[in-house]
Image (cartoon, rainbow, N blue to C red; front, side, top):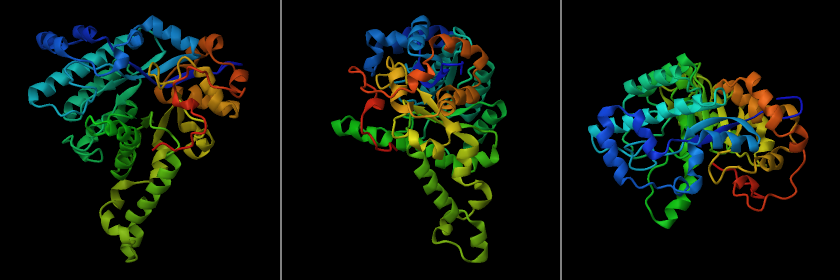
Amino acid sequence: MSDDRYTVISADCHAGADLLDYKPYLEKRHYDDFDVWAATYVNPHEDLLADSADRNWNSDRRLAELEADGIVAEVIFPNTIPPFFPSGSLMAPPPNAGDFERRWAGLRAHNRWLADFCAAAPGRRAGVFQILLGDVEEAVKEIRWAASAGLRGGLMLPGTPPGSGLPELYSRTYDPIWAVCAELGVPVNHHAGSASPPLGEEPAARAVFMVETTWFSHRVLWHLAFGGVFHRHPELKLVLTEQGSGWIPGVLDMLDYYHGRLADAATQESGTATAEARFGVGLAAGVGAPPSGVWRDHCFVGASFMRPHEVPLRERIGVDKIMWGSDYPHDEGTFPHTREALRFAYADVPRAEAAAMLGGNAARVYGFDLGLLDPIAAKVGPTVAEIAEPLAQPPADATSPVFARGASVRVW
């Protein structure tokens, strides 16, 4: 933070190449298949067909708009569809081995494009790279490549939704992934949306998706905690992004309850085991600390467009765990009204706490250099006095849910 301005780092933005711009990042043996795929592909996302779609790949426009919004750096999650995927879901099962190989090629193309895109704005972009879980050995190779290529945003962990055919995330099948991420200091990010099962096309499916998608994304927390992943890999960091934050205290209380009831080895040995303990046979030796301890030592939340009703929970969540995000360039994000969104949520928050949540925590987790960013923020960042002024009226054209007055639902 500069003397009178906040250094704002968005821990949740999105980007990707224009469709045909992925081709140069493919191995040449895939060029013919890419031409066939690209000629018939129909983009399912309206925002990627709009005039503003180039916000995903136009580096100069992106820097200018984020600076105008008071943001000096960003963590970049994927947005556009990588080559050879039939839809936005990375977990749609491939019909055959050849298709699986081509999808891997498409993800590598995205990751290599992203490395170049981040390099175009040195120190201001932390790219989050993609893998598939169906080939753990290949995933480990890609993690090592991404770390060497400077993609400091870390790994985007796919989900294992019902019907995917993959082992669940608590499975030791994935230990080589956790091990290499811990070894290299690569954050493991789990973004909302990638863990939901297909729900069909009926109108009700969209409402059910909105209700359930964050819950399916939360599952990674208890899968990895009860799977003993952090116990075996104590250097591992997990970030849960765009899943809300108000759910965290209550869910940790619930998980601690089950940890105590299922994994209390002492009561099992003394013959006074809980009724639930029979379900936890073999769990105590491998699970390690209770989930609240796992959260304290290993976890963070990318609290995209944090809502006013979530802010009073910050001490229970951990002020040092919360990383604000704008979700640029999505419609539900705060652009171009980030300053108003910050006033709406953080006006009553002490300066040091706001500075941590708006940028300091993200700098620590993703390795941003504040010595580089603070001078930029001194010119474009929101002032401390500005954010301390409560917002009387949300902007009339704002589309972000952060401005939904009276919203007190703790989103799963």
